Amino acid sequence: MHSSSIFNESDDLAEELMALIDMPLFDDSPRIRTSDVACSLSLEHWASTRGLLHSGLLPSAIVVHRAQFEALARSIWLLYAASDDHLSKLTTTLSLESEQAAKNMPQTAEMMQVLSIKAPSQAYDALSRFKENSWKALNSYAHAGIHPIRRHGDGYPVQLIHDVLRNANGLAVVSCMQAAVNRPGF
Image (cartoon, rainbow, N blue to C red; front, side):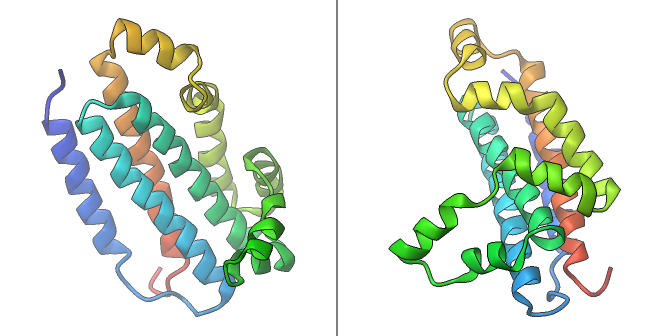
C-alpha cells in the first residue's frame, strides 16, 4: 500500500526534533508552562497521526491531525494572546466547576483572528496557510463528511497518505519552533 521509507524518515525527524527541545523551560510561569503543555499535546498528536497512517487508518489519522493543529494553535495563542482570565481557566484544578468555566474558551477561528494581530507573523502565517489549505477536509473527516465517506468506499491513494504525513511533519516542525520559544537556549 505504501513504502515504509517515508515513515522511517518521519520517525528519524521525530527523534531529531525531540532531541533539540529536550531542555528546561525559560521560566516556570503559568503562561510558559501551559503553552508548552499544549505544544506537547500537539507533538503527541503528531506521533499518533504517524502511527495511525502507518497502520493504514487514514480517517482516524486525519481526525488526530486536526487535533494536532488545534493544540499547536492553542499553544501559540496561550503564549501571545490569551488573557490572564483565559489562562487561569486552563491552569486551575480540574473539577466540574472549572470544566464548566473553561467551556467558553475561544475556538480555532477566534484564536486565529487574534493571532493575526498578536502572534509573530511567521507563526501566524504557518498556521494560516495550513488552515486555509486543509481545514475543510479536516472538518469533513472529523464529522464523517464526503471526504471520508468517498475515500473509505473508493480507497485511499498512497499520495494522500504521504501528503497527510508530510503535513503532520510540517506542523511538528512548527510545534518544535514554538517549544523552542519556551526555552532559554533559543
